[in-house]
Amino acid sequence: MGKVIVVFVGPAGSGKSTLVAAYAKWLREGDASVYTVNLDPAAETLPYEPSLDVRSIVDAREVARKYGLGPNGALVKSMELVTERLEEITSKIAAAEADYVLVDTPGQMEVFLFRDLSWRLAEALRGISPESYAVFVLDASVIRDPADYAFLVTMATAVQLRLGLETAPVLNKIDLVPDVEITGDLLRDFGRVSRALREAGSVYAEMLREMLRVLLKYNRRVEVPRVSALKGEGIEELHRLVLEMSCSCGDLS
Ligand code: GDP
Ligand code: MG
Image (cartoon, rainbow, N blue to C red; front, side):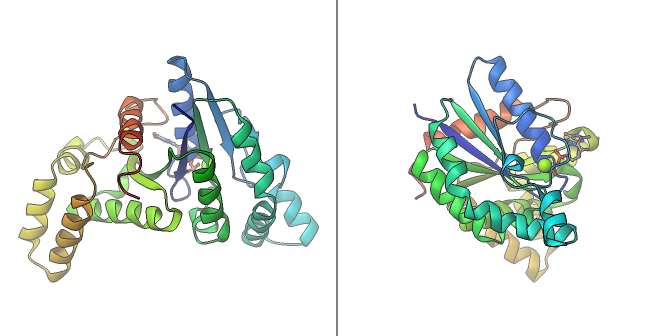
């Protein structure tokens, strides 16, 4: 087996960095070798010691000073600078001797996803290993009803479209959602989600139901791992999902 590469994408504060830390720890406890990559030039502190840290190439605070920019401007400029030096980063990933490469992306999802860096990186990673995937991390407290399940699956599909990497949704911070009824059963039971959407009776709910039906037709996974990166819970569920993606390697191309 070659390297398995997993890119963590998600809104700011959804727990990407914490999940990279928890997953790396879990994999290492199982004797796997792990190479962690921090691609966030604005990270203040990280809950893990990155094997490769973009801040040694581009540091957002230095960029802000040098170009006289505010936080957003500095982030956008940093992304440009990282993109210019992407080759340096990807050649290190290619040379890394590891079973797993975990890539932590910038806190602000939009500066990554909506810019060239995202698809260029994904393209380079695909060249390094055909077993390159993405995980879309969402804060579990966002999920209130079945329509939000459709939202989660749709977002993961949008990330997949953008990156060209098979992408799976993951719900993090499950420790903050005591109502397991909502995040549990609805997510595990597509029939229930579908029924709830049908019962909602609106044209919008019907559209979501159709979208979900089509998305799931091409996607064998309807279970969304529910994890707590902070407490290190549910990580084996996430790992099972990654293994499942690597089994279906090539199926969805
Ligand atoms: P990122 O911006 O997506 O990289 O998010 P971080 O990993 O930096 O996490 C943002 C905040 O959420 C931090 O304060 C984390 O400690 C917290 N956090 C991350 N995962 C969890 C979790 O599973 N449960 C709880 N309660 N907090 C979490
Ligand atoms: Mg982060």
